[in-house]
Picture (cartoon, rainbow, N blue to C red):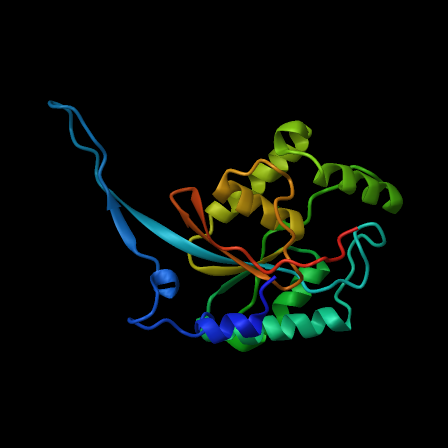
Length: 232
């Protein structure tokens, strides 16, 4: 796990981009794509393809785990994590903010809303994975089993949920911060890397994973910090 301090010493990653810095933080290029056509056929109009950069933030530490409460808010440590994350990302904005409807993500987005004087758009598709189990204990056991599997091995309902996450992220039309959840962020990284595992890495609370989305294709720019973190 890379500490934020060491990251900042190596490169001004969270500062505003300049012309001399890496293209990682320059505005996404606009490309013109031509469609091929045969002789005698009318050419198809070239369309402009936009690359959108998404900063995927896992919510701050919650006051309860997946197996303890259905919709907990942040605990004091989680609130502090959200404030620190917003301070790191603030120089990049103002950017659009997208958050899941759950309390812990909405509360994580509040410091960014305050910095940028913007209101987060609520997107249900990037919420936590939905459990079919009614009881809290059963929910924890169910999630533990799902996390050990591959998407090709889970139910069609879960595969549809995964597709919904990918489609929702693909539909975002501008560079944005997306405050989401452990499994949903894994979906984006798996889509970018071709990893079929439900869990391919362990994003820490308020870690920032960066992906570029262009014409429905995902590219991983940076995997967020990992840590032994509470999920169950």
